[in-house]
Length: 368
Image (tube, rainbow, N blue to C red; front, side):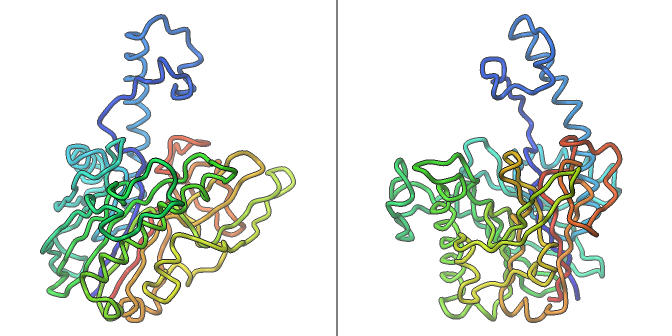
């Protein structure tokens, strides 16, 4: 009996217009800067038209990437609300692809922009095994004090009674053909601007470390510390951190060079350091594990894995010969691919937009 499990940050599946660009040019879309807009009402009409047209292209590509993943269970990040999820599933996945997801789950979390984690599930796996949600729990209310995780390096402004998860840790007890599987769906703190001489990743690392430790604590409280290895669980989501990357040097004219580099410290060490969970992506070649292209100009460019399906040791051992797939056909053309990894992009994918997402879906077939 097998299950296809996937995770994907679909990026800003929103049902709201953002008009703040009229007063803040840093938030104004580049195409609107080409026109002389006379007043705020005109700006709002143009922004609505631009957003609707752009969103349709984007969501077609998102749906194509999800179709290629062909997952029975799909963990998503950056979903606005259930209405947005239902509209996307019916209007794009079902209408375009012809095979939708009847079971939908979303609980509002902590994100200030309102983007949440969510889960789409088919009613049955490809081989006819029933997929059931037995229970679902949000851990959005857990505080640093609850798990004794408040430390000075979290930075000013974070108090012991603040919530740990910047979005949520959504816990789902499932039965697949009668067999148990527990999912933990997360979206960790993003890499914000640097502070105190540190770059964005370093300055926000303590928050992600606390989130990762909190996820581990939730699993250990559930199954018992020291007794988790034999359980069937997976931790899925955009973790906004990495343990290695492919630094990029050169340019299109002279040729790109991709240099593997390991990170001395990562928030994800909380999962891997003592074998608590297994990252099956390490079964792929070192230059073929990336799910996102990061660039802040020619001096800071790399490919890295931000999107994960971490497996419990027993689940990883049971699937020791299986390797995750990465769906990259929705990547924009600005993303440089290492030699031999080029794919045919979806029709009308652009230099940086439209695109399926900056993230790639990660999908894995699991024997339960």
